[in-house]
Image (cartoon, rainbow, N blue to C red; front, side, top):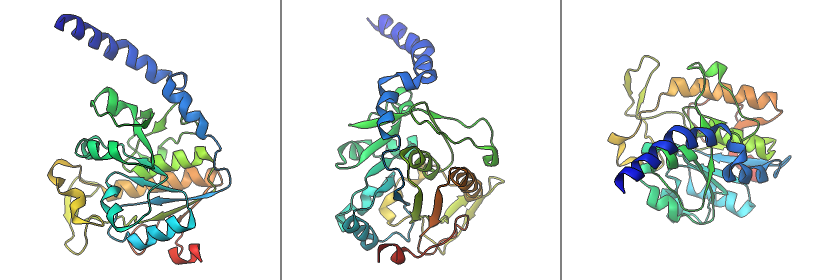
Length: 265
Protein backbone atom coordinates (compact mmCIF):
# COMPACT_ATOMS: atom_id res chain seq x y z
CA UNK A 1 0.00 0.00 0.00
CA UNK A 2 2.84 2.40 0.87
CA UNK A 3 4.42 1.75 -2.53
CA UNK A 4 1.15 2.56 -4.30
CA UNK A 5 0.78 5.79 -2.30
CA UNK A 6 4.32 6.84 -3.14
CA UNK A 7 3.74 6.16 -6.85
CA UNK A 8 0.50 8.16 -6.80
CA UNK A 9 2.20 11.05 -5.02
CA UNK A 10 5.05 10.99 -7.53
CA UNK A 11 2.66 11.04 -10.50
CA UNK A 12 0.73 13.91 -8.97
CA UNK A 13 3.89 15.94 -8.36
CA UNK A 14 5.42 15.24 -11.79
CA UNK A 15 2.38 15.43 -14.05
CA UNK A 16 -0.97 16.31 -12.51
CA UNK A 17 -0.05 19.40 -10.51
CA UNK A 18 2.12 20.98 -13.25
CA UNK A 19 -0.71 20.41 -15.74
CA UNK A 20 -3.27 21.98 -13.42
CA UNK A 21 -0.99 24.93 -12.80
CA UNK A 22 -0.46 25.49 -16.52
CA UNK A 23 -4.21 25.27 -17.18
CA UNK A 24 -5.46 26.72 -13.92
CA UNK A 25 -8.33 28.64 -15.53
CA UNK A 26 -9.78 25.27 -16.59
CA UNK A 27 -9.75 23.84 -13.07
CA UNK A 28 -12.60 24.20 -10.60
CA UNK A 29 -10.49 26.72 -8.70
CA UNK A 30 -9.88 28.94 -11.71
CA UNK A 31 -13.49 28.78 -12.84
CA UNK A 32 -14.60 29.90 -9.40
CA UNK A 33 -12.42 33.02 -9.62
CA UNK A 34 -14.13 34.23 -12.82
CA UNK A 35 -17.19 35.15 -10.73
CA UNK A 36 -15.22 38.13 -9.37
CA UNK A 37 -14.48 39.75 -12.72
CA UNK A 38 -15.85 43.31 -12.71
CA UNK A 39 -18.02 42.60 -9.67
CA UNK A 40 -17.14 45.96 -8.08
CA UNK A 41 -16.72 48.04 -11.23
CA UNK A 42 -16.15 51.72 -10.46
CA UNK A 43 -16.15 51.31 -6.68
CA UNK A 44 -13.50 51.91 -4.05
CA UNK A 45 -11.83 49.60 -1.57
CA UNK A 46 -9.41 49.70 1.36
CA UNK A 47 -6.30 47.57 1.78
CA UNK A 48 -5.60 47.13 5.49
CA UNK A 49 -1.96 46.76 6.46
CA UNK A 50 -0.85 45.41 9.83
CA UNK A 51 1.45 48.26 10.82
CA UNK A 52 1.56 49.90 14.26
CA UNK A 53 -0.47 52.88 12.98
CA UNK A 54 -3.54 50.69 12.46
CA UNK A 55 -6.36 51.75 14.80
CA UNK A 56 -9.32 49.61 15.78
CA UNK A 57 -11.55 52.70 15.79
CA UNK A 58 -10.67 53.38 12.13
CA UNK A 59 -11.70 49.84 11.25
CA UNK A 60 -14.96 50.36 13.11
CA UNK A 61 -15.59 53.47 10.98
CA UNK A 62 -15.03 51.38 7.83
CA UNK A 63 -17.46 48.80 9.19
CA UNK A 64 -20.11 51.41 9.90
CA UNK A 65 -19.69 52.90 6.42
CA UNK A 66 -20.01 49.51 4.73
CA UNK A 67 -16.66 49.80 2.94
CA UNK A 68 -15.14 46.90 1.03
CA UNK A 69 -11.86 45.91 2.66
CA UNK A 70 -8.94 43.55 2.09
CA UNK A 71 -6.87 42.34 5.05
CA UNK A 72 -3.93 40.03 5.47
CA UNK A 73 -2.14 37.40 7.50
CA UNK A 74 -2.71 37.85 11.25
CA UNK A 75 -5.19 40.71 11.14
CA UNK A 76 -7.45 38.61 13.41
CA UNK A 77 -5.39 39.85 16.37
CA UNK A 78 -7.40 43.07 16.28
CA UNK A 79 -10.84 41.45 16.08
CA UNK A 80 -11.42 41.65 19.83
CA UNK A 81 -11.33 45.45 19.62
CA UNK A 82 -13.74 46.10 16.72
CA UNK A 83 -16.88 44.67 15.11
CA UNK A 84 -15.20 45.16 11.72
CA UNK A 85 -14.30 42.12 9.68
CA UNK A 86 -12.62 42.18 6.26
CA UNK A 87 -14.58 41.51 3.10
CA UNK A 88 -11.59 39.66 1.67
CA UNK A 89 -8.65 37.99 3.40
CA UNK A 90 -5.33 37.09 1.73
CA UNK A 91 -2.36 35.16 3.03
CA UNK A 92 0.43 33.81 0.82
CA UNK A 93 3.38 33.53 3.22
CA UNK A 94 3.82 29.85 4.05
CA UNK A 95 5.79 30.54 7.24
CA UNK A 96 3.23 33.03 8.48
CA UNK A 97 0.24 30.85 7.59
CA UNK A 98 1.77 27.62 8.89
CA UNK A 99 1.75 29.13 12.36
CA UNK A 100 -1.90 30.11 12.30
CA UNK A 101 -3.66 27.86 9.77
CA UNK A 102 -6.12 26.56 12.36
CA UNK A 103 -7.15 30.10 13.32
CA UNK A 104 -7.51 31.21 9.69
CA UNK A 105 -9.59 28.14 8.93
CA UNK A 106 -12.05 29.22 11.62
CA UNK A 107 -12.34 32.85 10.46
CA UNK A 108 -15.91 33.76 9.64
CA UNK A 109 -17.28 36.37 7.26
CA UNK A 110 -14.28 37.05 5.04
CA UNK A 111 -13.73 35.40 1.67
CA UNK A 112 -10.30 33.84 2.08
CA UNK A 113 -7.87 33.86 -0.85
CA UNK A 114 -4.96 31.42 -0.51
CA UNK A 115 -2.37 30.24 -3.07
CA UNK A 116 -3.10 26.71 -4.24
CA UNK A 117 0.64 26.00 -3.95
CA UNK A 118 0.37 26.09 -0.15
CA UNK A 119 -2.13 23.24 -0.36
CA UNK A 120 -0.18 21.32 -2.99
CA UNK A 121 3.37 21.67 -1.68
CA UNK A 122 3.11 22.76 1.97
CA UNK A 123 0.10 20.71 3.02
CA UNK A 124 -1.64 23.84 4.34
CA UNK A 125 -5.37 23.48 3.82
CA UNK A 126 -7.72 26.29 4.84
CA UNK A 127 -11.45 25.75 5.31
CA UNK A 128 -13.59 27.49 2.68
CA UNK A 129 -10.52 28.89 0.92
CA UNK A 130 -10.73 30.41 -2.53
CA UNK A 131 -7.55 29.09 -4.10
CA UNK A 132 -5.56 31.00 -6.71
CA UNK A 133 -2.47 30.16 -8.71
CA UNK A 134 0.51 32.27 -7.67
CA UNK A 135 3.37 32.47 -10.17
CA UNK A 136 6.91 33.64 -9.51
CA UNK A 137 8.09 36.75 -11.28
CA UNK A 138 10.51 36.06 -14.13
CA UNK A 139 12.91 38.72 -12.89
CA UNK A 140 14.37 39.84 -9.58
CA UNK A 141 13.90 43.45 -10.68
CA UNK A 142 10.52 44.74 -9.42
CA UNK A 143 10.61 47.42 -12.12
CA UNK A 144 9.90 44.60 -14.57
CA UNK A 145 7.30 42.81 -12.47
CA UNK A 146 4.27 41.39 -14.24
CA UNK A 147 0.71 42.13 -13.13
CA UNK A 148 -2.18 39.79 -13.84
CA UNK A 149 -5.30 40.89 -15.71
CA UNK A 150 -6.83 37.43 -15.40
CA UNK A 151 -6.65 35.99 -11.91
CA UNK A 152 -8.42 32.82 -13.05
CA UNK A 153 -5.09 31.94 -14.68
CA UNK A 154 -2.67 33.32 -12.11
CA UNK A 155 -1.53 36.19 -9.95
CA UNK A 156 2.11 37.20 -9.81
CA UNK A 157 4.08 36.95 -6.60
CA UNK A 158 6.08 39.68 -4.89
CA UNK A 159 7.49 40.65 -1.50
CA UNK A 160 4.16 42.02 -0.24
CA UNK A 161 0.56 40.81 -0.13
CA UNK A 162 -0.47 44.31 -1.21
CA UNK A 163 0.70 43.52 -4.75
CA UNK A 164 -1.50 40.43 -4.84
CA UNK A 165 -4.44 42.40 -3.45
CA UNK A 166 -3.96 45.08 -6.12
CA UNK A 167 -4.20 42.44 -8.86
CA UNK A 168 -7.33 41.03 -7.26
CA UNK A 169 -8.87 44.50 -6.81
CA UNK A 170 -8.11 45.43 -10.42
CA UNK A 171 -9.78 42.24 -11.66
CA UNK A 172 -12.81 43.01 -9.52
CA UNK A 173 -13.12 46.42 -11.14
CA UNK A 174 -12.23 48.78 -8.29
CA UNK A 175 -11.22 52.25 -9.51
CA UNK A 176 -9.86 53.66 -6.24
CA UNK A 177 -7.70 51.85 -3.69
CA UNK A 178 -6.86 53.30 -0.27
CA UNK A 179 -4.09 51.93 1.93
CA UNK A 180 -4.19 52.18 5.73
CA UNK A 181 -1.88 50.64 8.29
CA UNK A 182 0.91 50.37 5.72
CA UNK A 183 3.70 51.93 7.79
CA UNK A 184 6.49 50.52 5.64
CA UNK A 185 8.97 50.53 8.51
CA UNK A 186 10.01 47.75 10.85
CA UNK A 187 11.95 47.23 14.04
CA UNK A 188 14.10 44.67 12.20
CA UNK A 189 14.45 44.69 8.41
CA UNK A 190 16.91 44.01 5.61
CA UNK A 191 18.43 46.45 3.16
CA UNK A 192 19.26 45.76 -0.49
CA UNK A 193 22.61 44.24 0.53
CA UNK A 194 20.92 41.73 2.80
CA UNK A 195 22.24 43.50 5.89
CA UNK A 196 20.06 43.52 9.01
CA UNK A 197 18.86 46.97 10.05
CA UNK A 198 17.53 47.56 13.58
CA UNK A 199 15.38 50.59 14.40
CA UNK A 200 14.39 50.60 18.06
CA UNK A 201 12.15 53.63 17.59
CA UNK A 202 9.42 51.69 15.77
CA UNK A 203 7.30 48.59 16.23
CA UNK A 204 6.64 45.99 13.57
CA UNK A 205 2.87 45.57 13.92
CA UNK A 206 -0.26 46.88 15.64
CA UNK A 207 0.26 44.38 18.48
CA UNK A 208 3.26 42.56 19.89
CA UNK A 209 1.23 39.33 19.73
CA UNK A 210 1.35 39.48 15.93
CA UNK A 211 4.82 37.98 15.55
CA UNK A 212 5.56 36.13 18.76
CA UNK A 213 7.14 33.47 16.53
CA UNK A 214 9.25 36.07 14.70
CA UNK A 215 12.34 33.86 14.80
CA UNK A 216 10.58 31.59 12.27
CA UNK A 217 9.33 34.37 9.99
CA UNK A 218 10.86 36.19 7.05
CA UNK A 219 12.66 39.46 7.73
CA UNK A 220 11.13 42.18 5.51
CA UNK A 221 13.26 43.97 2.94
CA UNK A 222 11.80 47.47 2.83
CA UNK A 223 13.97 48.62 -0.08
CA UNK A 224 12.70 45.77 -2.21
CA UNK A 225 9.16 46.42 -1.03
CA UNK A 226 9.47 50.06 -2.11
CA UNK A 227 10.31 48.92 -5.64
CA UNK A 228 7.35 46.52 -5.52
CA UNK A 229 5.04 49.39 -4.55
CA UNK A 230 6.44 51.39 -7.47
CA UNK A 231 5.56 48.48 -9.77
CA UNK A 232 2.08 48.36 -8.24
CA UNK A 233 1.60 52.07 -8.88
CA UNK A 234 2.84 51.72 -12.47
CA UNK A 235 0.40 48.90 -13.26
CA UNK A 236 -2.54 50.54 -11.49
CA UNK A 237 -1.89 53.85 -13.28
CA UNK A 238 -1.87 52.00 -16.61
CA UNK A 239 -5.32 50.62 -15.78
CA UNK A 240 -6.75 53.97 -14.60
CA UNK A 241 -6.83 52.80 -10.99
CA UNK A 242 -5.81 55.43 -8.45
CA UNK A 243 -4.04 54.27 -5.30
CA UNK A 244 -3.89 56.58 -2.27
CA UNK A 245 -1.98 56.15 0.96
CA UNK A 246 -4.31 56.97 3.87
CA UNK A 247 -1.95 55.52 6.49
CA UNK A 248 -1.51 57.62 9.61
CA UNK A 249 2.20 58.40 9.34
CA UNK A 250 4.63 55.76 8.19
CA UNK A 251 7.33 55.99 5.53
CA UNK A 252 5.61 54.84 2.34
CA UNK A 253 5.71 57.79 -0.08
CA UNK A 254 5.13 56.01 -3.40
CA UNK A 255 1.43 56.88 -3.56
CA UNK A 256 -0.24 60.26 -3.07
CA UNK A 257 -1.25 60.90 0.53
CA UNK A 258 -4.80 61.49 1.69
CA UNK A 259 -6.22 61.98 5.19
CA UNK A 260 -8.14 58.91 6.31
CA UNK A 261 -10.73 60.94 8.21
CA UNK A 262 -11.60 62.93 5.07
CA UNK A 263 -12.73 59.75 3.34
CA UNK A 264 -15.58 59.01 5.74
CA UNK A 265 -17.02 62.47 6.36
